[in-house]
Length: 390
Ligand SMILES: Cc1cc2nc3c(=O)[nH]c(=O)nc-3n(C[C@H](O)[C@H](O)[C@H](O)COP(=O)(O)OP(=O)(O)OC[C@H]3O[C@@H](n4cnc5c(N)ncnc54)[C@H](O)[C@@H]3O)c2cc1C
Image (cartoon, helix red, strand yellow):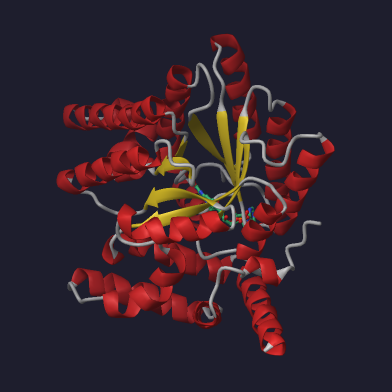
């Protein structure tokens, strides 16, 4: 029976030292002022080129990142696969705005798609569109295209070429690719290109996956539009659901700029929207594929129940559950143990490049109600269980 409280299964792959390290980290992240101070200090350290590896690598990095390179992550991928958890390698270098940096990120993402080819331990490839162009170009292309200069239009064309090249490489390698969702001000341009890529590359099966942030109240109509379009143009959509990672910034920006808040009015409304989206794709599973990225236990129980109620095989490759490396192992390992398809996002990048991702994880664990408490409780139960066992 599926039970996310089974800590023996949840932490079967973790040594005593790893449990202690995780416990210490989550204890520190409980305090918002420490996370705030850490963010401030790391921003300064980056500016003055102060070395950070010695403090970040044995702590946050060790918990949430697979390694600096694909090769370094191989150990973790094998480790996860022994518990029937697949990996989704996520090159997580963010904030790079120079042409050389953007090109390097693009090329590394191509390598990650090649690395996934024919690899039974890798479930998907993934990319974050803002990492292959400049923020300003993406924001203008989404919100003020008519004001773009000739140079910006050229940069946007180059972005489109890179975006399509990643999707084409995934198609050529027969590897599914998730297009991560981002800030509201970038998302229109990302949606437009994702729709285009799905039409081009999903003719035989879903290769390109759109990400829908269900904290946005306009995503169910968008989902319906994707389905209608796929029927009319004859392709198979891939849909990744998340709740959305940028709520505070989105509300603030909407208030400052005087446009309607794009986010659901409260948590319950987001949860209802999320459930409705997942149920919609499950009702159209013969046409669409589903990737559900969440640490919410209720959402995971609900989807598992829905799969069983519909009589769908738990190992059906069209439906994946997903959590981030270092978080909610009680969900991932117990789902995999019960035969459901599970993949962990495995971020990788050098310490300095992955810092924005790590800070987001630390902030999320401080702000997402109950997440840190849940992780600490699970770790404590497992440490006590092992002590008793001797
Ligand atoms: C595998 C994976 C991939 C991901 N990829 C992306 C991605 O591409 N883009 C992205 O933006 N995020 C992504 N995320 C992060 C995700 O969007 C959430 O921020 C994170 O998972 C927390 O939500 P939850 O469903 O796990 O947990 P929960 O704790 O159930 O939900 C917390 C979330 O609910 C929403 N929420 C909280 N309070 C309110 C409120 N008052 N009103 C309205 N809504 C509220 C917010 O979205 C908040 O993050 C990903 C997460 C995972 C696990």
